[in-house]
Length: 67
Image (tube, rainbow, N blue to C red; front, side, top):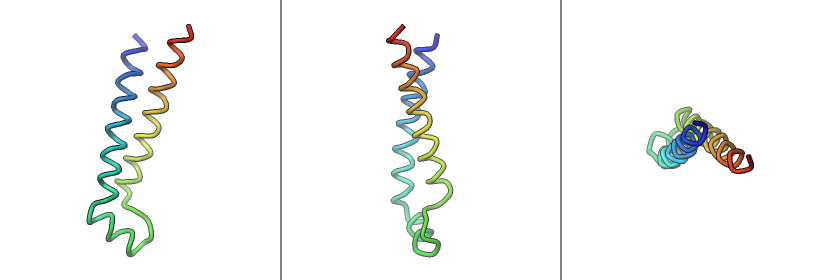
């Protein structure tokens, strides 16, 4: 049961990372970087969520192989 959940987290994390990367190249994020020096909050949360889900999913899959 843990392998499917880990796989879903891994794939979902990768998808979030792709959306975050696309959001960082958007016009809104460019304007935000121009005025504040940082990308939009949406971009940051997509990237943080993607990294976290990818790490948790990969760790779950690797932990399952060792058992």
